Image (cartoon, rainbow, N blue to C red; front, side, top):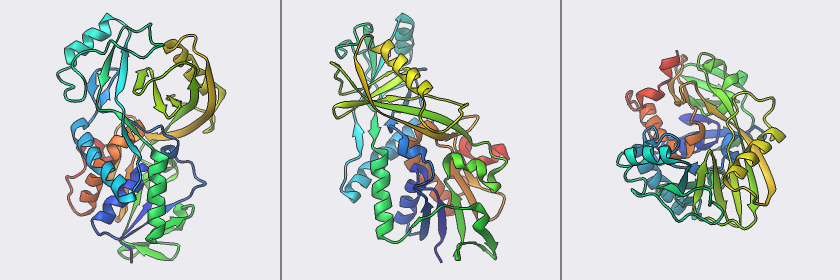
Length: 344
């Protein structure tokens, strides 16, 4: 009998599965390519600084340390490259922003350069300076998830199927799904958790994000540019995002999202000729306090690991290690701010 059934193979589910595998815990992971996946639409930008407020992200030190170990190890294991460090330039618009940077720069060490960057890429002439986040980059999320999927298929633990909650049946000391018994089930469903009958009390909300892939005539940058939106260099194109939409009519890309992103891009690079090659949208799982939900649900053997939101690339390796320790019996392994009991 496999020990664990993981429902969902986005970043949360995939990284947890890899942690279980490394620990020698047997599992199956079920996912349907026909179901929406925010992870597969994500640009994958990682950055341990809240650049808008000039402060560290939640668990910045722990998450960057774990990510720096985990993703390179995964690259070596899969013999692929998908984790990149590029650096990020947070454009400073005025003296007030510069003052905030100078006041807090020591707190942000070692993730930023202590002096402002004044030599900006051509086209950014309306900005005089920028805060440079040296510890920033992106993960090729679809590439990583594809590598995980191929590996899980090869070792026989991948189930390509749509998961229906009605098919999960309690048995004595276990759960049955499609004729297979599991000691426990971990839900990593993303925004689909809203349909989970065992998570009705937990307010996982969808937040729609849209991203454009485009070319910008005459603009070159090796670093990510940040000013309300990010401009992420990818080969000879850029990925530009993202919107944050709490209310949305549908999950598909739309004209409103396109115009919002292009409008903000033109504020940064006025007059530049842009050609949009692709537009994508995904619905992030998030919570009212913007912290994940992790822990044991009301029924014995059922667990939730969800709500990583827009910072999933950095959070996933560290929190998956926490979730593994919790499943192994360490009741204090999950950070207090992420424990789902705060909602129950």
